[in-house]
Image (cartoon, rainbow over all chains, first blue to last red; front, top):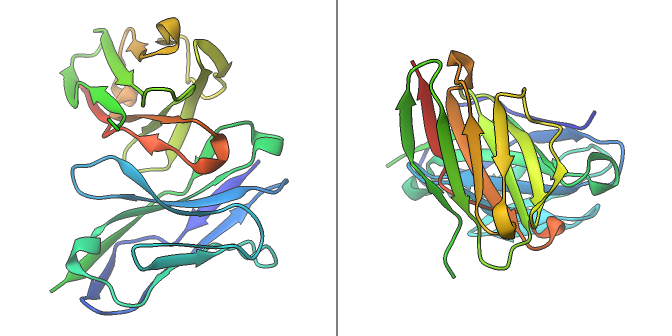
Length: 114
Length: 113
């Protein structure tokens, strides 16, 4: 079945460092891909999305490109801030084969130090 | 607009007791979903409502879990009787269109002791 694999955390960076969180997926159809973020004490928020190959999703300085050839959707940010400390979840939704449910990765916790 | 609201935010119950979680989706969102995250693992799908109808309940772990969505508005998720392995964070989400992604509530942290 469909699945999402993302790098294990925690990831600890200094402020203004470059961030990459790797995410790869397995899907039989043509899924939409998402990154969600959970800040401390809050619910999950949709950070960005891409619905087809080569699409680039971006928001709040974060971006991710839907790479069908490598089945990847890596999250990147050029300069992280302390306020970016959170848990990041990669996810896919494949209505053609998986119905309307979303498959999530295990989450990657990011700590940013001042 | 008001977001997705869940309550209680925390619940601690003894094994064998009953707990009911509630979710109020964003007004006008026909799609309502329940997910849970157990022991810091993946967030797992439980079920999906379209209005008041269960579209997909393939993720419900067993018949101790009962979800309802009366009138297609708020939803409840009842666990009866609760077991230790039911502990985790239960998330509710809603959406108008599936491809837009979800709006999640803050979750209910359930601890069964």
